[in-house]
View 1: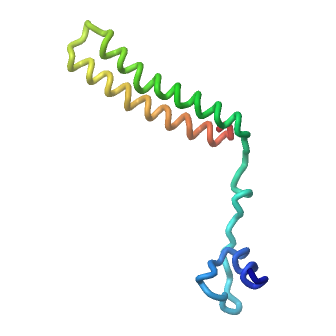
View 2 (view 1 turned 120 degrees about the vertical axis):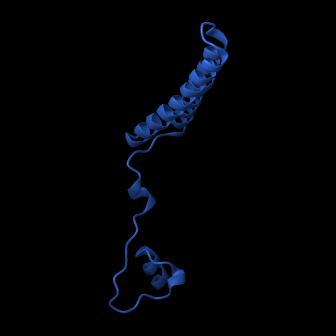
Amino acid sequence: MTDALEAEVDKGRSVADGPAPAGASTTTMSSPAEGRRHRIGWIRGIASGVLIVLASFALTVLLPNEVLTGSFSMSRDARGVVAFVIVIVMVAVTATGLRRLQGRGLI
């Protein structure tokens, strides 16, 4: 790249936009490194991912399955509704928890 193109790219302009008009202001873009507040290593990332997948599976699949197969005091339809509600709530709890962990830089 030429120095002029590099300068335009550094200013956040696309090369396809052509040269900036004289006196025009350009919007600067932050670099990817500026957007990252926290960095974790590969081992911690893989371990976190495995734990999150296992916990999510247990809460969204195994718990409703236990309700469906183990609760004989409720009718079949009632067990289905309870299991469905558990799945929906666990997906919402998992998504909220993941977002909070990401915001704190733990994952």
